[in-house]
Each structure stands twice: as C-alpha cells, then as structure tokens.
Amino acid sequence: MSSGLLAGKAAIITGGGTLFGEAVAKVLIADGAKVLIVEINAESGAAAAKNVGASFVQADITNDADIEKVIATALKELGKIDVLVNLACSYDDAGAATTRAQWMNTLNVNVASSALLGEAVRPHMKKQGGGSIINLTSISSSVAQIGRWAYPVSKAAIVQLTRNMAMDYAPDKIRVNAVSPGWTWSAIMNMLSKGDRKKTDRVAAPFHLTGRVGDPEEVANVISFLASDRASVVTGADWAADGGYSAMGPEQAVPAIPLLEA
Image (tube, rainbow, N blue to C red; front, side, top):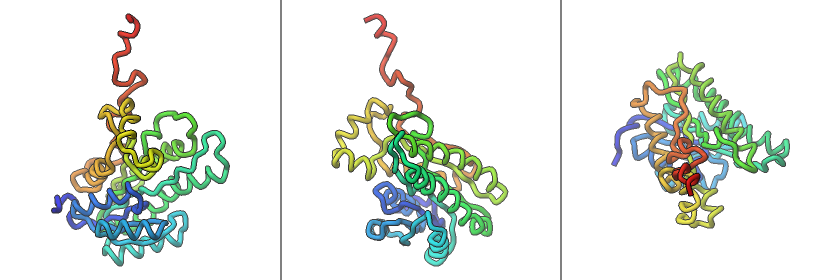
C-alpha cells in the first residue's frame, strides 16, 4: 500500500541493482514513485527491477553516451524526471597503496558521474518546475579510517559537491541534498561477514548508538523524505542516517571518567 509521499513522482536510481539500491527502489515505489533502476550489471539490475516493479536500463555512468541513454530511457519509461538518487559507488581503495588508476576510477564513479548525472537531469527538472537530487555519501566522509584513502576522500568530495550543486541549482527550484549512512547491511557487509548479520551487528554495536548496523530500508526512508515535497525547505544539507555513529566521540557510549578511578 502506497504512503503517497511520492505520488506522481518519477525517480532515477543509479546502482539500483545492488542490495542497497534495490531497497531504495522498493521504498520509493512503496511511497508512490515510478522508478528507473540504472545498473552496470545487467543481470542484477534486471533482477532488482523485476523484484520491486521498476523499469531498468543497463548503463555505465562513467560513459557520457550511456548517461544520455539513461535520460532518454527515463523520459520514455517514466514520462518525466523528478528525482535523481546518485547511489552507484566504487569501493576500489587500497589505502596508501591506491594506484593512480584506482584513484581515477573511484573519483570518476563516485564524484564526477554524480555531477554529470545532475547536469543531465537539470534541464528536465527545470522545465517542469523543479526536482530533488540526493547524493549518497558516508560517515567515511568526515572521519579518518585506517587503510582507506580513495573511498572516504571521494565521499568527502560528494558532501562539497552537494553544497555546490544546491547553490547553482536553487534558481531552477532543484533541491540537492546528501545522505550519509553509517554501517548499513549491504552487499559488501554481506560479503565480508559471509552473510552473518548477527556477527555484523556485534562488530558494529560499539560504534553506533543503536547498537547495530542499519537496514537499507531505514536509509531509504530518509532518501524518500528528501525526495518528497515535505522536504521543500531542505537543500544543501548532509543528512546523517548512521545510527548515531557521527554523534559518538572516541569515548564511545561508555563512561570513560570512572576508568581514572579504577
């Protein structure tokens, strides 16, 4: 049953063939939107679209011709473009050993492609009186993490990109915001834990006030709100959907002072 939050809206979701992307598509559709899933992997993208009732286009967002194909498909399948969710992401990161090729790939996928997709949807949103763009960043954008360079740097760049886009797109009545998830159950978490959600929650517990990883649907609910007209006053903001990760300092959620008296 639709909540009606996004009734009449048409949304593009890049990286929609992932576990996370499929969950976002599912929530946006449940809230009334029509959705086009964009995915480089044809098999996973088509499967996700079938699972949630979305349209699908196979595309490499680092290819400008493919971006044009995405826009053309969205207009054909959805009739218009109200919402863009830049969710597609590269995790190609070897820390200090990251090669130039890895740096360029990560920045190309995560930053440049988000910017270029924004420019591609902009005239269509402007023509219809406005729209909403949501960029996916991360808690990694604001903290240092051992052995990780390219990914967090790209996510920090997306936070600034979001502000710049919001500034320049405001005259077109296009709102641009970012969402920063904490540890969220996703394909990479599933892979690293070998499918062990309980173990993942145990490892995540000390770093999150909620004591667990988030569900992708929980982050999707934040995205859906930002895509909706209820967020009409919100632009240029980075929303933490992180279970309290960013609020917690190095002392974590345990009393540190008593340790001095022990």
